[in-house]
Structure formats: C-alpha cells, structure tokens
Image (cartoon, rainbow, N blue to C red; front, top):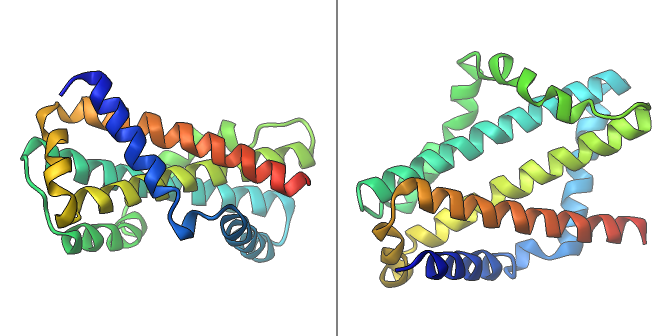
Length: 193
C-alpha cells in the first residue's frame, strides 16, 4: 500500500468515525459545555479553573499516549489485540496517572498553551479551546483504535500492518488533529451563533 493510499484510508476511517451519532456537533457542544461547567464549578476561582484545565489537558495527554502505545504495539507485533484488552489498558490510565508523578512532570509542558493570553478572558477562552482540542484528539484516536480492533474490519485494517508503526501513528495523528481543528472551528461557530 502506498503512502497516498494509507493517507486516503486513514482519512476515510476518521471521516466515517466522526459521522457516528456521538460526534453530532450539537450533542458534542452540549457535552463539552457540561464538562467545562463541572470543572468551573469545582475550581472556585479563575486561577483554580485554569489549573484544573491544565490538569485535564495533561491527563488527556496521558490517555492519548497510552492509546498510541497500544496501537504501536498492534502494528509492530502485527496483531489485532482484543477490544477488551484495549479497554482494560485505557481504564487503568487514571490509576497509573494517580500513582505516578505524571501530572507534576508533564503539566509544565502544557502550561504555556493553557495560560496563553493577556487578560483573564483571553486565558479562559484559550485554555478551554486547548482542552477541547486535546479531548477531541484523544476521543478520535480511541475511536480509531476501536475501529481498528473491530473483527469485522480486520480484512481492511490488515493493510495498516504493512507500514512501520511510526508512519501509521504519524498519519493517524495528522488526521485526528486535522479533524479536531475542523470540529473545534464548527463548535466555535455554533457557540458564537
């Protein structure tokens, strides 16, 4: 399979994934607003809100990295592991993050993205957008792996095993980031309408 075909197939899969009911823009907007409201209410202050968003962004990063590691292992071992094993690994992420220094070690790398802006309003707008972007990417990669592991898709997905894991991961992440940006633009349009 050529790089062009890998790109086309990846784009097709991600495009099909975001047409699923749980990616409906209005439902997505409502869910995100609900999560942000919960974070805001538990924060108590502007600084606390930004700190909680930073913690959540860093947690999403841990989630995404775990998913990427799982997909990398599938490709390198040329094996379709069970969906249950993937769910089990992902379910362990919160405990692993809590039992380690992951948040403390990784929060500084995202601080400049979350705390960007010269006014409190700009900071909040930017922090929320960055949080939403990381959450969308994480959800997309998790959905992609779910489709990858689906036994009914194995005849098609076996084509991905022809490439190095780095090439597949780079391609998948490129499309997850691209679609996340597009969805974020649409959500911002809905929000401002």
